[in-house]
Image 1: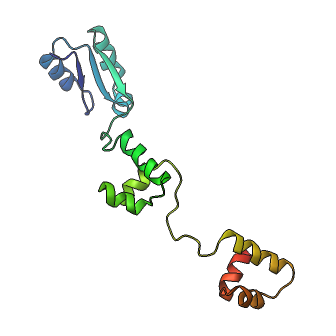
Image 2: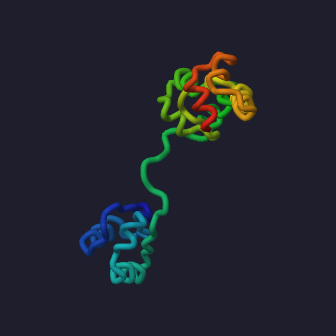
Image 3: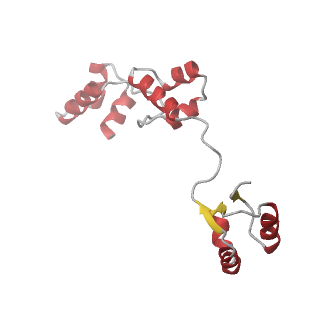
Amino acid sequence: MPDEVYINEPLSSRIIMEILEEHPNIKRIKCPTSLYLRTSKKYLDALRKLGVEVEPVLKSGRPKKYGESEVKLIQKMLNNGSNPSEISEKLHLPIKTVYYLKETPLKRGRKPKYTPETEVEIRRLHAEGLPVKEISERLGIPLRTVYSIIKK
């Protein structure tokens, strides 16, 4: 017979009696913290006198589907240059799960088309007073893109 029971419904006199009848040697009743806080002090005191402690469980809910090994594998693959969609295909995991389990901050979306050096060059030319249209023509970059980079 277990000396510990987990319940997920509010403790009432009826439920307490049922638990005591089913488990006469019970020592501990565990319940979610939210239920423990709503349980009457009278019930808690009465159970304590009977030698039964009511204990809130801090972490409850659905157990994790993926463990530390998956997290480490995903991180290793990311470090080796794989992108999340490749990892998703290789490990047969949803891509959202890959993003959830990764340890490094990855941003979804397109990679920048122009390198940081090109952006620095655009800003330098603009600071020297070169017109935006001329910068666009010289570097072969669309005019709107040049304006966008300067605004950043």
